[in-house]
Length: 261
Image 1 (cartoon, rainbow, N blue to C red):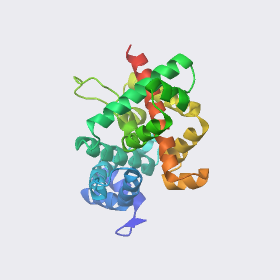
Image 2 (cartoon, rainbow, N blue to C red):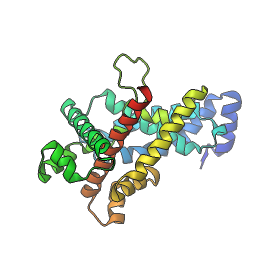
Image 3 (tube, one colour):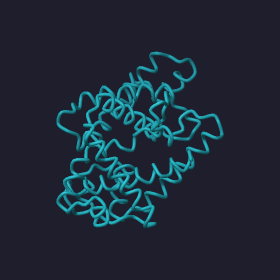
Image 4 (cartoon, helix red, strand yellow):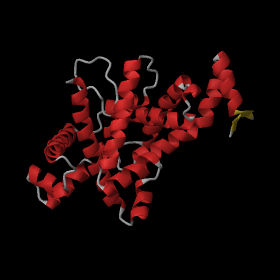
């Protein structure tokens, strides 16, 4: 695709060499469809009160940021880099508007703590029955809890890496994994360690949860498409996704605490 019939490679060359505002504008226009694509994925499972146009507005800021900060020397495709930035901007916008009720966030944290404590004690992934027993819930109550946490789980991997309320410059987990502009060797090594650990945690998930995470985050499938692959309903995929994210967050918090202890 070309902006004003100028090849995108030439636009990049012009923008990098001279910081041309015109080239920057054409690059943003060229990659604008990425914003709509990411908005469609983020919108899955969100409450109807969340306006898709708001997501797109947040995402544009992420796209602009991606164009301005992209470094081709890192060997990453711009689309891959931009999608992470766009999604992060949408999550930041949602968080700023506090669309997840405090009560839901508290329930999510309680569930994550329970899973973290169980798995630390068991040395393996806790089963649904074990989690329900720890929460003193029957199957119906547990399913209702997962359904309530569904929307929150879609953005939970973008939660702040630092939970210190006095930290004026906290990092999101996404920023940790990207290590977007780290020059210090220590910061780069820490980001690599987090990325390595995240890969190990995903591999340790129960099979279906691992498949949902892989297909959704790495292959770009929608929850409906994943349902067709697995032969289950979209609501069942949402439940598997929520459980997977709860496990990931629980283990990542344990890992974060081990780094700072």
